[in-house]
Image (cartoon, rainbow, N blue to C red; front, side):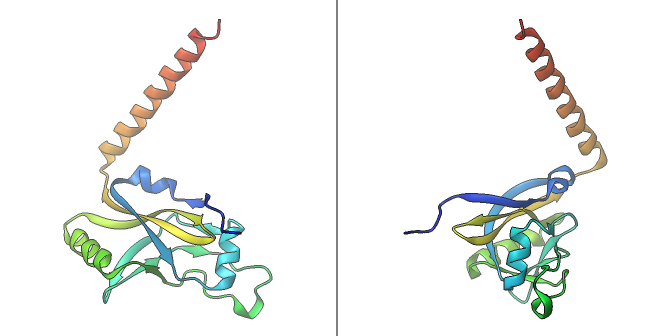
Length: 156
């Protein structure tokens, strides 16, 4: 029997889409300890203020909080430790060139399971200004209002 071919989202960084324009997204693996994987599968992970950084040709996720696993005892590690992303060297070089451009940063958008392994959806993002955030909020409100009116008209 083979592995499951489904993708199951474990955590999502909703604030990232609010605070940043996502220019590009790519999939990367994570180097984790067993208790971290169990804790992530239980949904005890927070991507809210996390970001990725390139150090010496390696990409690390910083400020990603993975809570201690309840039955982990001595095998638990620091919840805020840097976690290495597993990418090809050519991808890392390309990301490094992109990040050197002013205003771009690497933000983890979501964590999910793919064929039994934890993967991260990494976004190359540009920060939004306050007026951009207001524009998107107004746009969402208009879409919601249109959907409500459409629903009311089709009710009868």
